[in-house]
Image (tube, rainbow over all chains, first blue to last red; front, side):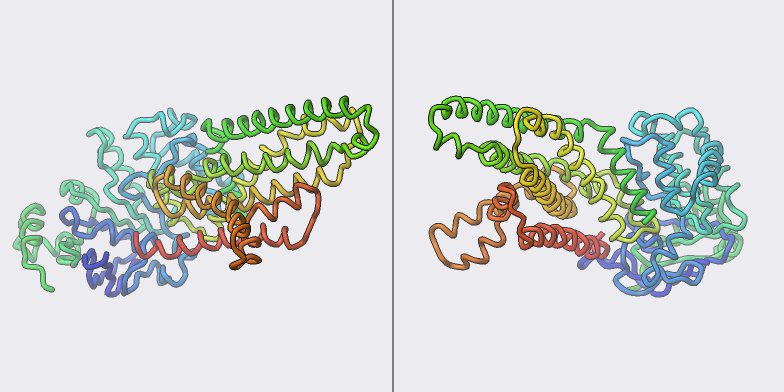
Length: 241
Length: 255
């Protein structure tokens, strides 16, 4: 479903992501792990077409995002690290805007908005200005816009950051319930989140992919260690140039 | 086209949910209305004084003494206000991180630019139409020529459309709204005044005259429609939009 080939991004001299090769089959929930500054966000930005790679390519369902950006972007729901919300708009009209651009019309648009509002628990704030709602609600609006058009691929950059414990549990359940036919990539620092939601993990450090595979397989490879131990030993490996 | 319309609606909602668009439109109507009032009053004093002088009174003409300077002044007010209207268009998207949504939605850069441009043109149209009630008031009292007034309106609309296109470009350069406003105001002012050079030097005289807003607007304010002036405004707007497009394309590599 998602395939990258030598995906690379340089910012001047700085190597953010280097020759990243990854193949994520349909229906996978991938936990994307790595220290701060490892290149997780940059990778996600390249997958969603926000940033152009320095070289290499990324494909969504066989469509190369650089060559046919509109076609590829139609398949993606994306929640960036900072939820991209217009504070001057009401929650509902923000979702209307996103839905229209994603090709939803009339009744279908209305129904979908009601559906995601309910799913993300936004009923109470749906007619309020985004400026006036709490951080937890903003994060939910961010998730609501990502899942609005029922995308095949969901890319979530730290979706539970800044939420209270109850909200975290709710959002995790939501993400789990969204799985199934969808392919989800989820970056996070909370390893517990990975074990509870994901079936596959990718660990990157200094822009290189260090580990990639099903959780059970990786656990086997590391002699049934806990995910925490696996993570620490993976990122302390010498990164090859 | 539907995508463009979705952006137009979003931008208009943002414009009219914050005080910016209201304040800019209100100030525009207030200042131009004030100027219009002074000019009409002045004209009526002149008319009374000219009553005894058939030669002078035959030369008094509302179009020339009121409408033409009125449009010229309105143009200056637009030069001051429009950079404030356009400053947030891209700068604010970057600051609020909403650009990460905008540029990952299935939208082309052309659609994004057109949507934002059309939304600002709508606000400009509202500002201009809001002056109609007082600007046409003299038509109830006397008989000014209609055509020059209409071309004057066309002139300030086209001029505003050119300013907005440049303001959009300025906004795409930075995430700081103030920088965007100051930059577009400064460059537009310079382009307005650049014809001054032709007074002191003949170097590139034709070219400088051509790229100066002033020389083009003068004709329209007097009610003279010259195709070359229209072509100038439209090409200026087009260049502004094209530069914005180029910036958006280049930025994809740098963010």
